[in-house]
Image (spheres, rainbow, N blue to C red):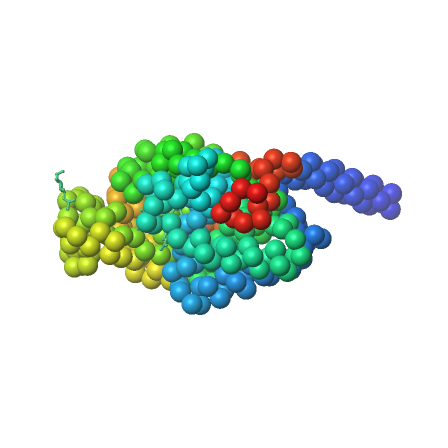
Length: 325
Ligand code: HEM
Ligand SMILES: *[C@@H]1O[C@H](CO)[C@@H](O)[C@H](O)[C@H]1NC(C)=O
């Protein structure tokens, strides 16, 4: 009996050793949440504090910073390529259609980078990691879930306006195009729906949803359409803002419950609900289950953050996020 329980203990220990070996191998994945713990333990608290400051000055900034990380990751991976300004050799992604007069928050990233380099004593934290951490801290600042951000990304020395134009999904897309856009990044249908839930935060410009509120008759609540028309005229007012859901500064399920009642603002939002299928089931379940949405959102953010990072000796740690060293 005694020897039997000793054998059990022994087997148990063996299993623990073997499984941590397997986990250790699996987590020789390039990125790790502990990446800056030794080299600059003050880096993450500094980013958090500065994001909290920026969001308390303007709630929308949390949404804008979340979107920057998304637009970075979908263009040749999460490598801070979106932050590079135009030069004779850099075809800036800032001038791509989805970003021009739309992507914002660059000055906040500049301020965070300067402060982080100062507290660390030297430039050890990449701009790509700052984008990933700022996205997480923005979500938390607006009441959303937290997650351990994987770190150790390095910064690109190139940018591509054409890849930004091709690979960032358009608000005019139908469901099959949205699914294939995400699939191209290694993201599945669940990631598409959970991450579209990022539209629980922030605003969109009239020019990007005008056709939906004036021309779409299917799958739009008529009273919602006329409400939105009040601040988005048929002609002019291109940059007038409407909230993407009724609570644009709160991470909640309103984005999804709005889709269920045909009150999605963008064509691409409403495409997730109305034609049946797995996206419709997910929207429906997230619309009444904040816990499920939050858990899946956090999971999919980690997946998105792992898209093609530069690691090791690839790329560089920029001194200034806007310029190659
Ligand atoms: C599924 C495909 C997606 C499309 C077609 C799309 C499209 C758009 C568009 C057109 C806007 C308005 C931009 C403007 O008016 O200037 C917007 C805003 C925003 N998007 Fe997306 N998006 C998508 C997915 C995502 C994802 C995955 C995230 C993050 C997880 C995200 C986060 C945001 C946020 C937070 C805003 C508000 C930004 C602000 O107020 O500054 N979007 N999106
Ligand atoms: C509605 O659709 C017509 C025909 O495609 C187009 O010419 C018009 O510009 C659209 N109106 C708006 C407000 O988008």
